[in-house]
Image 1 (cartoon, rainbow, N blue to C red):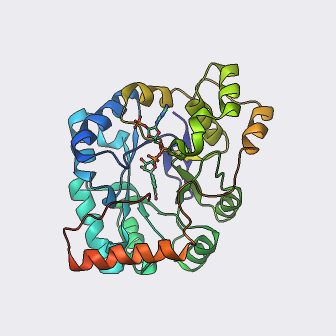
Image 2: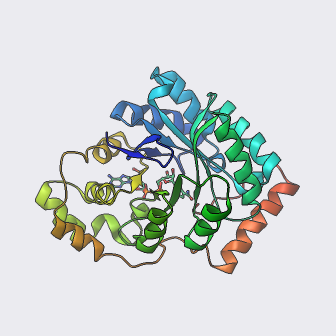
Length: 295
Ligand SMILES: NC(=O)c1ccc[n+]([C@@H]2O[C@H](COP(=O)([O-])OP(=O)(O)OC[C@H]3O[C@@H](n4cnc5c(N)ncnc54)[C@H](OP(=O)(O)O)[C@@H]3O)[C@@H](O)[C@H]2O)c1
């Protein structure tokens, strides 16, 4: 495994396994399969409703907790100082652990400064080994990185060949924030797994389009957390450390950038109102689990 070193010196595997849209029923089996395939970094979130299953799989695997890098994310309704602190304690309970390796603020809306202060304190208390953010594009990233007491160590954003985040990455590099790709395959949207350029590059190295994408991320220094519920694909996605892309192929990959989201824009007012609406709805109905869009 290769690692990235975060600004506080913590080492994070550059390749992990993500469990967004992995159902509660399947999650324990999937995480056990991922650990068997060799993954030692797992990415979950409060809003995925599967932290318990991730925790029980880790426990069941018998692998020492210290060997596993656990990431979770605080959802917006738990923002604000008090709520965030409480929710992180709850996440730790669900994950059956007394520390989390990386805790992220999931979205750049609502009282993220209050929530960030809670993460800073939990970090200083040794409950969180690293803290970061997700979906903070350059405007919000510069804001938090400049005015918070502790600078975020990671920013997890949509990144794949059709949305390469060149500018966002430049700002993350400038502020010493490690970029991590969510949807490293863009969930295959727009025919990404069948893109002729990826298939052509893959044929040269006897690798699949998925492996070419992951290798490309890794060579750019982007941490990745691909998701699959299929064991053979987990293994395929893990086998990306035995080849490297030529400069010419990296250039070809750069040419695939459409510079726009395959999902939604965090700058779309309708989307921001949608985020506000789910927070409001959950305030009035704690059990409501509104259908998740892509976050
Ligand atoms: N911070 C955020 O806001 C945010 C948002 C989205 C995601 N995430 C995180 O990022 C992780 C990855 O993103 P994602 O799950 O949205 O998308 P993704 O990893 O880009 O793509 C997952 C899709 O690709 C398929 N797939 C995986 N490996 C494949 C292969 N080798 N060949 C063909 N198809 C393959 C999977 O199908 P099967 O499962 O059927 O194999 C699934 O449909 C998530 O699980 C989550 O942890 C974070």
